[in-house]
Length: 615
Image 1: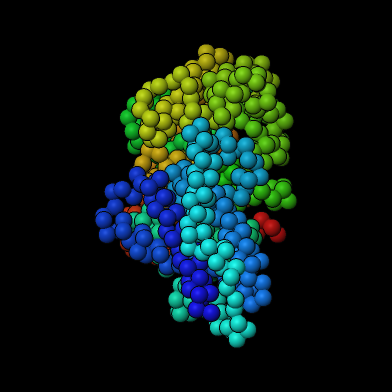
Image 2: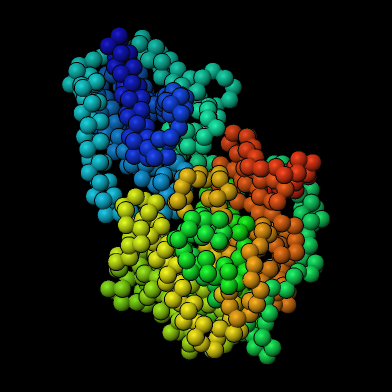
């Protein structure tokens, strides 16, 4: 009895040691993110995070607890081997999950969450995002960690010795009691509230709190929380939220004219959708100098917006907001994962298709990723050029597919012969992880930041060549080129996933129909593009309380993450963490307006999450 009880305690200790070792590995692998933390906060990652590790160790000890409670009464040998192989399978699973968590953090800026499940549907995207050394290191580390961990398990709990132990029938309730007592660490103590992120939240630095999380607990919490597509928000009744937004609706207000159409010629539209671009790399929009000289030129030649925001941080969220007019929300999925909901979107390109425009889409990667083909077809786009339309050699020049120079060249050749008017969209891939452009070395070092700067500089140069070529044709005089992005990158740092800089993307308008030259301070979102452009063209668009003409409506922007939502306006900016119920203000220029702004912002978030798209 005593030996079995001690063995049960050793088993629980094994999982605690395993999870602690993985936390150490995660910290080492992602050390640049926390290396500058004060020492007290650095060690707080382990001191405060251990309560979540104790919880997960409890979860994985429940089944073994039942085996100790019942199996060792009559079948000690079978029970010892059942325990052994249960542990081996669990170690393999947790190792793969833990390595994935560590590897994705630099790009995601967050711990592993339910978004990862969408990537499993298209594993080619996972492969394309990994560097060659990650592809080699991942299986080697998996084998090594599993071998060391299982060897450690055998040292603590030898199966042959366990097979010789017996539990008397009267010991069953005692072992069941100790197994049931695991509910204490699982819940995080004896308080009424169960384990949640707040149990380990201890720092003003987001990274310190994220590193304290247990990766399995965070992943499963997110999967279970997001198993339904809708996130519940209860700031106010849905009817009240709708009434507030309707009171702020200004779609009928005239906007300043910034696009001057050519008499007798419909305006051609070219939408450039840049992969992983942010204002942080564009000097004219407050970013680093010398990274994107061509985009800097375009900011001066046309009209640029320095407070334009992506509503989320992944490609599907950018596509949903820009093309579908549906902003991101706090769920991990988007409407693009649900075909029945996709059909209800007010697609941006569809307005042009309905006017008889020639419709085309150019993408260097796999057009099936994130349901992109379905989105384009529902948008009214009938000509889709993707990786499969290029030679095999060209498609293999980057892991994601066709480098930008070849993509833009194909698009330019086609547009010269395209029937006018046309709407054409190009979505580049060269600035996607793993930043693997060969033969272009403007930033020569091998740091992740400089690799990113190198590929965005390459993407900038290719776009520059494309626009220079357009300027030499008769198309230019009656064409509008809209340059924006799907989302940002956390590079160049330091920024985190709640920082506004992690959502601020370029919006630059150039072309023969753009006669003015200025940089605007107006705040806007990706899903506002439709309303703004259609009003400039004198067309009508469908009423949408979540979108606005940001040239004439109130100036504000939202962004969303699984942890909460951000609001930006000239008067105030904040991020509201829905996990911790904490609101961090970035600035507050008008304290007297904060309450009214907060009420409006909560109404917007409430309306976004109330499920009206499903009705």
